[in-house]
Image (cartoon, rainbow, N blue to C red):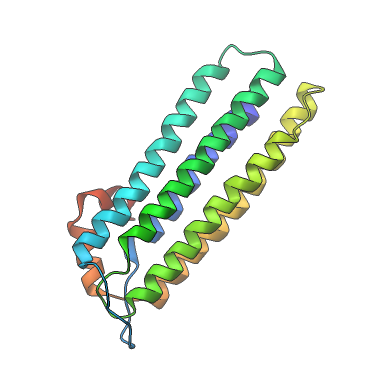
Length: 198
């Protein structure tokens, strides 16, 4: 199912793109920011990049598994059920990732709490995207291959738009908050390297 493969590829590519913007360059500014109950920058980078990395891996593994399951499947109801399962797992994985990022707490840098709050807000939008995708996937018509493929195509576009918006949020986050401490911490953290842009 070409449309389904396109969606899975798209999700993986866009996820990596916005994760790169989020983990690779966020930081604290020079204004007053609370440092209470804050994590050392290196600890924060390991926690956040680790959570993002595990989440991306879960999605990639789910995509591969779904692709294998779909290879010889002709029944549209079975395809739909497996597709919905994939999106529900992605939604759950996203929820867990957001909770892990919350648990990391703010980094111990200027405006650390603002960084953490904005990061969590952006990641919650990702989770909302998957929640909406699950709802729409449940409504996909299996009356014909054409109607199903069209529905998957529309859903794919929605996911792309939502994740692209989140990617923009990450970019503005990096632009607003500059921190050499966090830059150094992410540079030195192996878990962050997969998200580094060139």
